[in-house]
Every structure is written in structure tokens, then in C-alpha cells.
Length: 248
Image (cartoon, rainbow, N blue to C red; front, side, top):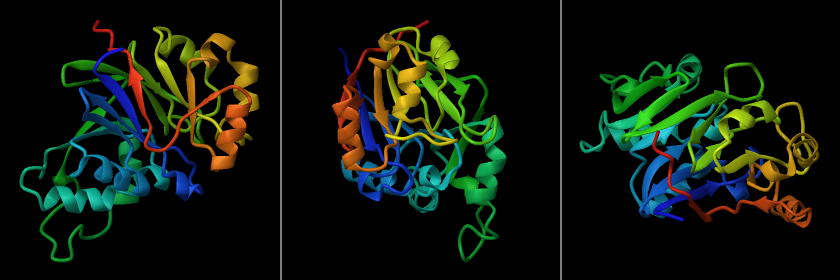
């Protein structure tokens, strides 16, 4: 392995508060490097693990269990001169209007006015890829509610994070072809916007499924049931070693 790891800040679905909102941080040499999403419980777990706030985040989609920490993040960033305007947000371009509607359009970010919500951040709209700290990430659409509103992320050779999704075999054939760990949305039972284990077992070849680590499940009991079927299941607070990224 290497000096790379993935810390699971939360692994539960929107109702599984005890498991934390689904959120993770890619670590480099034990330090937080890029955080995925900003849920309420997930941000609390981040602060407990590292202190402070994330310096860089990628947003997968705009459901509240993945963005509910933004108001706290704004306050923490704006009132800290070291972070004001420096918290880097990588946001797929089609998500920006949704984030504006859901977290940034309140008339005054502060009661006294004088500041825009986005003034606390450095927003980087992204398409099918972006660069962070000299390394290239790939961004791909997933199957969650409406098209082009939810996205996965790949750091080639190291990790794929699907975000909330139904099975996406065609995407993973393209974006998980270099031996990456695949952190995949999966519950004991699927529904129209999330994968169930029957779905993954039906649609993914065994070699691909063996690289999957499941998260976004409904309860600790469901996690144990997934393990009983022979699958790897992520736990809140778990730190997972990663292979070093492949530098193109």
C-alpha cells in the first residue's frame, strides 16, 4: 500500500443517524486531503477526527444528508481569516444551481448582511475531470433521481466513490478499470434511487463486486446482514488503506 487512505466519516442513509451521513475524506500521509460531501453528521465526524474544517471538498449531489453541514461550514470559514475564501469546493457544473437554491439563496447569509454565502469559499465548477494538488480526478454521472444531478468520483488506481446511485455497470467498466477500491452505495434492499445487494449481485461481475466496499445502508443490523452474504461493508470512523494513485 502507500501513504494514501480513505476515512469513512459516515456510512448511513438519510435515516440512519447513528451511522452518520455518508461522507468520506481521502487522506495523504495521514492528513485530510480531499473530503467528499458535507453532511451534518459527517462534518461533525470530520471535526472530531481532524479539528477545524475541510480545506477542499467535492460535492456528489444536493440532497440534504450530503449538504446539511454547509451553513456550519460557511460560518466556520467566514469567521476564520485563515480559511475565508480559501475552502475549495469542486462542484459539477449542473449542481451549482441546485446548491444555490438549497444552501445559498437565503436573503442574508449573516443577519447583519454584507457578505454573500459563496464569499466564504473558492468554488471550482467542474466537468468530466478536475485537478487537485497536482492530481487528476475523473467525474462521472450516476443513476440517482434526475439525470445529471448526481456524480461519482475516481482517483485513478486508488479509489472510486459512487455517491448515491443505482447499479452503474457501464460506468464502472470505464471508471474502475485500474484496480481501485470501489466505495458503493448499497442497502440490504434497493429502491428506485439506491442500490440493493440483489441489484449488485445481479449486475456486477464477481471480480468487480470483490473490490466494492458498501456504504449508505439503513442500520447496523443491515450492515451485518450484508457481511453475512460475504461482502465488505464500511464502518463509521474506519480508515481504509488505498493504493497510490496512478499518475497519467
